[in-house]
Image (cartoon, rainbow, N blue to C red; front, top):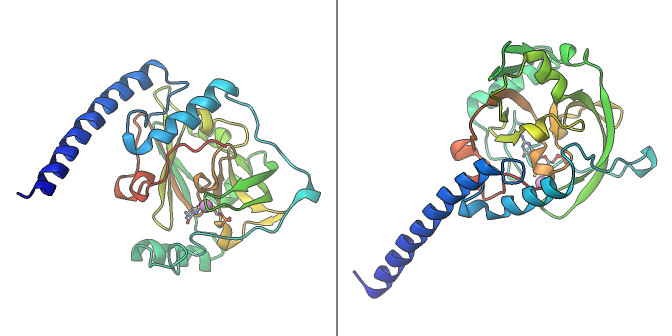
Length: 264
Ligand SMILES: Nc1nc2c(c(=O)[nH]1)N[C@H]1C(S)=C(S)[C@@H](COP(=O)(O)O)O[C@H]1N2
Ligand SMILES: [Mo]
């Protein structure tokens, strides 16, 4: 073994020890202060989460609203990331998982009549909603600013059903702690119950007064207004209520290097 290898081996072992200690400490701290520490606390790759989560949760109330704008404030709104899961994933249009892409093409070509949104996990009444059923809930419309990690922001008007209403209909169990979302382009992400029950967290099927366009996530996308734009998942495929933190494995944000919690 060369000197260099030994050095990097040492750093790796030492790094692993520090990361391990931080992880254990973090988990204990997060259990003790669940309102101000995120479930990722202690994960060295997600150190930023604790800062934004703690700041927001300590300074703002749980239900403080993100600023809402007027119709005159609407701006042009680019569609970024995946624009059509039936064609490909992300800016480079890498192929989505073939089976997912195929099922998205099928429901998209049928004008989303066959789209269903299953809600399962820690709920008393697991069920699947059609688009028409979601539209029967009392709607909420909000004009908000979307902030992308790439450095642009845009103001759009969103109409949809508050996630809290859909969760209530499914009978969320007291053990619920997170809500996990999956999309037709393979994205997996979660939010905690404070964000899930927040009045501005909606399942949006309308944008700027029209049906949600395909590049913006049709038929239904999430809007999570107190976090960065990438938490607002497009092309929703399923919702799972969990009692454990789940980061989505190889498809989750940590693998792509993005923070789980990004308060704005
Ligand atoms: N399923 C899915 N959701 C997604 C993305 C994506 O690529 N796939 N991109 C995210 C990012 S980084 C941003 S900025 C917004 C973009 O939304 P828009 O296309 O309506 O502007 O969607 C977010 N939600
Ligand atoms: Mo983004």
